[in-house]
Length: 118
Length: 112
Image (tube, rainbow over all chains, first blue to last red; front, side, top):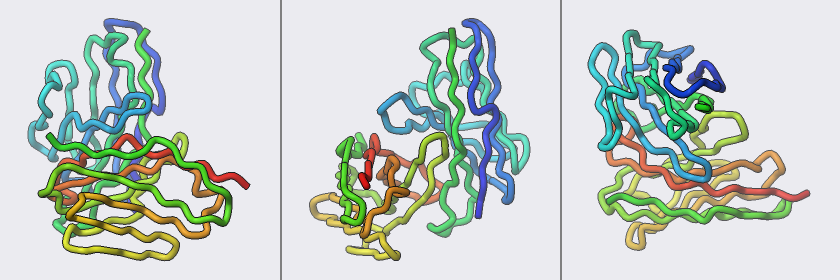
């Protein structure tokens, strides 16, 4: 079936540094990729939607200059947390969709990346 | 705004049936999903239902939808220890193309 990977699975960084998270669709072409953020015991909150070759669409309240998203190919999207602060510590999950209209072609989720900012 | 609510915990004995409930507020929800998240893994789509359906059965899984009450349930028959996980209810207006609104997840614990 459709597999989505994320790298790294966890990362610890110092405050003020930037961190890049990769999301890859391994066996299908992902026209659309989604980035979610999950706080402990909370639901997933959509941060942004990106379509290959175009700028990402950010949800209200998500700073586009802080969370840089690049979707340069049909199998790779990256999320860069710039000048990370402790409040950015969270579980970041990506999902990918081939973009077909069929309901069964739903979003396939990656395993998530745990970011801890010291 | 849109909201999806679930109870946070459910504990059952192996072999019993589990029923996980979910309520949503958006009456224009078109697609409703159940996802399973095991520790350290991504979300796995278990099943989905269109808003014009009342029930869907897939092996041990039965989804019931009461559109009038905006209530969705997932029944797992003959629950096994391998079913222990967090189950997320989600709704969307546009299917795979659209924003998924998730509940907080129900942690299912299956005792032997």
